[in-house]
Image (tube, rainbow, N blue to C red):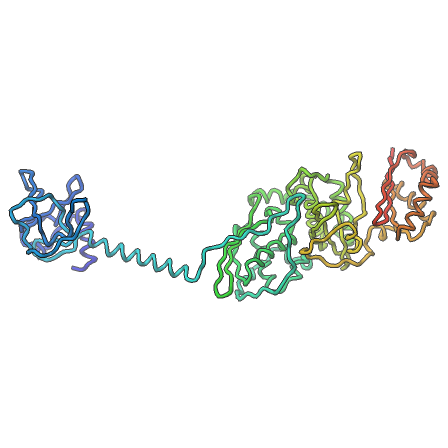
Length: 520
C-alpha cells in the first residue's frame, strides 16, 4: 500500500466504514488499528503484550519501561527524550509503567511496520513549509524593503506651492506599456496642456498614465521608470495642467524598488471625495461651463479670456477662510483664495478651448498663484485674484491692472517660482488697456473726454493707462490739480451719477488710473 493510501485510510477510515484487508490482519477482528473513545484518546490492540485499554476489566494499565518501538520517553522535567534502542522488541518485563501512547512507528498485527498519523503529517507539513519559503525567497529576490516617498505637499492657502523642477535629463523607460491604451478625452483636445508639451516622449507616456489614473479615479497605478523622484514631479505636472481633477488634493505616495537600474513604482494618489461625490460636483460645474459656452463659444480668444476673467470676479469674493484650493470653492461656493481663482480661470478657459497655465510664486509679501494664457498664439500673464481687490471701505471692484501683461510688467511686483514652468511673455496686443483703446502716450484731453463719455454711458468705472510715469503725471495734473475731472462730469451730469462722489486709484508701477463713480 502506498504512502498516500496509508494516509487516506488512516484519516478517513472511521467515517468511511473502515474494513480491514484480510491480508493485513491475521485474526478475524474487524476492528481498525485504533479506535477513538469519547475523550479522543486512541486505544491500541496488540498481541505482543501491549496494553489493551478497551478490554481491561480491572481498569489497570500494564506498560513496559522499555520499548524499542517507543521513540520518546518522558524525563523528570516533563520533556521528551529519545529512547536508546538497545533492547529487544519485547514490551513485557513484568513491570508496570505509566501509559504512553503507541509511537508513530508501531507494528500492525501482521508484524508489518505501518506509519502512524504523526509521522505521516510531519513530512507533508515540512514539504508545504519548504514550498512557501521557496516562493517567498523567489518573489523577493533582489528587492530591498519598500520605501515610501511622499509627493510634494499640496499648497496651503497662503503657503508656497510645491517646487516643481523644470525637466532635467530625459527619463528613459523600456516599458512600452507605460503608454495607456486610451487617453482621457481632455488630453486629446490638442495644445491645451503646456507642461505636457514641454516633456519628451517617454515622460509624456508616464504623464498620460498618471493622468489616466486620476481621470478614472483609480486607487493607484504602476509606473516603470529610471527615476522614482521624477515620477512624483510628473504627478505635480499633471495636477498643474489639469484643474478638472479637483477630487485629488495634489498629494501622492510611492512605494518602489529598483532592479537593474529600473524602478518599479506604485503611485497612490490622495482623493478628497468619492467618485459619486465628484460626479455630483461635475454636474454643477457642467452647468457653469455650458452657460459660458453659450456666451463665448464662438468668440475670439481675447473675448473668451475677458469673459472668464469678469465672470469669476463678479461671482466670487476673495476669502482667506476658504482653505480648499480646488476650483469648486470659487465656481460653486463663490469664495476662495488665489489658488482657487487661478484654477477656476484655467479650467473655464480650457473648457472654451484656450490654453491656460497655472503658475505660482510670490506677490504682495506672500505666496501667490496666477495664470499664463495664450491668445492668438501669444502668451500673457493674467492675475484674476488681483483683479478682484478689496477696497479700504470693504467694497470689491473689478480691475484690469493685471489683465494680459508681459513678463517684464508682471515681474515688477510678482516673482515666479524658479521651479515653475512658464513661457516668456513679450506680446502686448491683448493687454486690456491697449486692446480697448485706453492706452495713452500723451495727455490727449479730447480722447480722454471721449473715454469718460463711453464709460459713463456704460455706467462703469473710467480706466486708462499711460505709456510712462511722465505722461501719467501730466494727466493727473489736468484731471485733479486743475479740476478737469469735475468739468467733464458737469458736462455728463445728465447720465445720472453723483457728481461730487467719486473715488480713484493709481497704480504707480504700471501707470494705471481708475476713477470709480457712484451712479444713481
